[in-house]
Length: 234
Ligand code: URA
Image 1: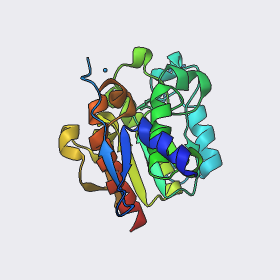
Image 2 (image 1 turned 60 degrees about the vertical axis):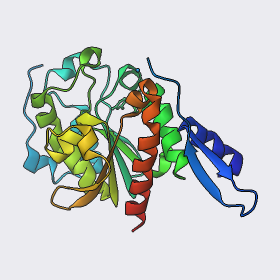
Image 3 (image 1 turned 120 degrees about the horizontal axis):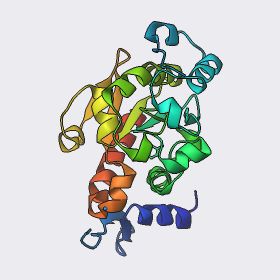
């Protein structure tokens, strides 16, 4: 990526680069943003899903009626990207734009996610992106435990098939559900967790929608991304 574009994406992350005239070394400073004001359901059989290949898994998810969300969705948002990716990004659930277009993270939050990825030298197509829920909760309400439970085998299988070197959980809902904890996001970020039986390294950061509302937190998100990059490169 050329330097000008990289700067553009870093700026979207609130990162300003300074080059020292004497040494030519680059250091990063985070801009302090101005004060922010921000059919009947049929259960999913986990054992069964854990043996599906990509094609069968996608078909299963697209036809899923395991929870009430299938009644209100426009379409299923399965996941997108490189199925052999080193990085897997996991968000919460599709929003209105994702529900309309059938792809995760394509709204405003998605644009910031793309910029976050670019800032650490990754293109959207290089990573695999999925959500905890594959269908949009009405009015963007939080996912309900029974919805997460029904959808969990799908995400688990996606992680197993991608076999990433790193999972980046974006936002509290993704982090808490992947790590099976109620701990607040502030206690989950800043360290490396382990996901599932494969013990895949997992790093937690803020949800880009939250960063749009609270741009001062971009500094911490940038620290999380650098931690993730270090872990993925190990
Ligand atoms: N927020 C999410 O968590 N996922 C999406 O796909 C879009 C917005």
